[in-house]
Length: 406
Image: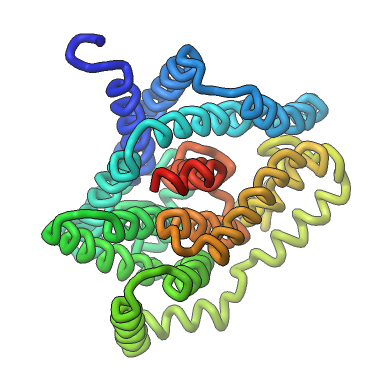
């Protein structure tokens, strides 16, 4: 015992704080100094927590080999491109902290109940939904901050001109807000489908509905499409009572009908009809061209940017990001991991659908992998989507033990 807390309880407290700090560090309503303090604190906690797990001998040799296969190709690419000054911070965040979080989350999943594991995500999602509702429905206007002054000025120009029509909540833009709401939706759904009192379940259902409404009103087409695909699969294949499925689909059709009747539908349709891929096809073509110039080891982590003459853009596609940054050799371990995760998720969705929690985590992985065809978010573990992605990966990759426990 350490005081009144055991080391096991301290590890859970550390887990809770890591999730909370990373959630809060992304809030655009917090000054950048406070966000950076939260982020730095989470980094320290991760290192300390993993050292504790290693001391407890919770990591086996197979995991270390797998992590080595993941890290080594990225490191080779980084060293090969060292003269072109690849981004050291991105390299460390990706190749070092992803494995650390995976090790720590595996320990947490193996030692605590499902509700306790999901609890910090629930608390943070409730805070996001409540604060975003206050902001989005005009009850209070928060100040918006951002590390990138140019991005913040663009936001102010769009807001002042009336062009910022999509719901952004307490974040700078809808493409940041939508992935957070995906995490919230799956978190709420996990709690709803597990044992809770009627009152708590009803409260979470209300929050889930509010979360879903704001998600659709972000007008973020990639995330909406990704979640729609996975949720159709979930509701068709899950063991949820048939009457509940019918009620859920009726509610969905009612919501879509009201959305169709609103001004948001005209805006959404215009975006789909006129904006198309919003310049992504041009960016992807340029990224593919750069990839073929250096196909084996890439340009180096963080070295690719698409310039349109005024601003710089990322690849807007995670898989292209890895290929153009690390090349075939450098991204080999990453794509092996993604392939294993995808195969396991698809297998669980169609063959293990009676295990609802496993089905939900698999649907979340599928949602992420589809959504990342249009954005680059999982390149760093320090955001809520990545944290829930790591957690879902842990549950899926330990399926046999998971099946017995849950």
